[in-house]
Amino acid sequence: MFGSQRFREIEIKLRVSNLREIHKTLRRVRAREISPRTYELNTLYDTPAQDLRRLGRLIRVRVEHVPGDSKRKREQGHAVLTYKAPVRSSKEEKHTRAAVASRSRFKVKQEAEVSVTGADQMDRILRGLGLRPTFRYEKYRTTYLLPGIKDLKIELDETPVGDYLELEGSPASIDRAASRLGYAPADYIQATYGALHLADCRRRGRKPGHMLFPNAKNLR
Image (cartoon, rainbow, N blue to C red; front, side, top):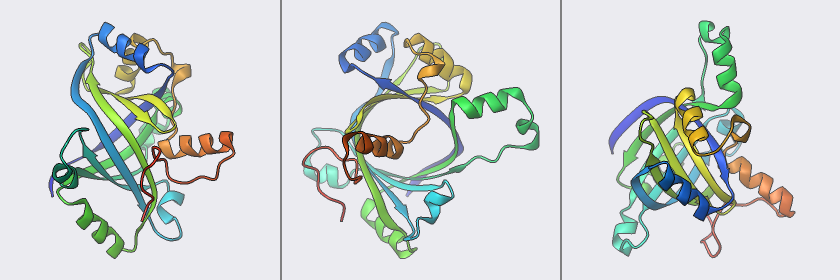
């Protein structure tokens, strides 16, 4: 394993109705691509009784590779282990108007991440701790920065349930970036991809499963 970070994650999603138009918008605002379009396979782990989900917590292993990589490079692809949990606000935060507004408009989580060199070994470790894969979802992600807005990431996600922008940073930087991209606070989405997938299944009258692109392999 190598590299780790721990911080409070503040983010929103924005629905993208037209990929071609959002690419034009990103060019217009001079967004700088810092990570190329990358394939991600995300696997969530939980106990058989879904204890983590009930507590609002998450453990995820994400395997990444750039399309066009060789089979060997894909098998040795970069992986990230992530833990998320609800944020416990301080007594001071609970009584401030700004804190209440932020919690209502943004998804705020405590997050810890570590990069790993072997996703298969991490799977064995998590299984050894009594956790099992419960949900798998795929997406393609491209990451951008906006000039003039510090500490903000824009991630363009192409998923089996639609395309989204994910903005991560401070509340003020998210508001500025969203406005520059043509969105308003009413457009902010706090839902996870799992929740969006369940909503999509309900709309289509389908039994919920994994959020995979067509022809993807089933979860083992």
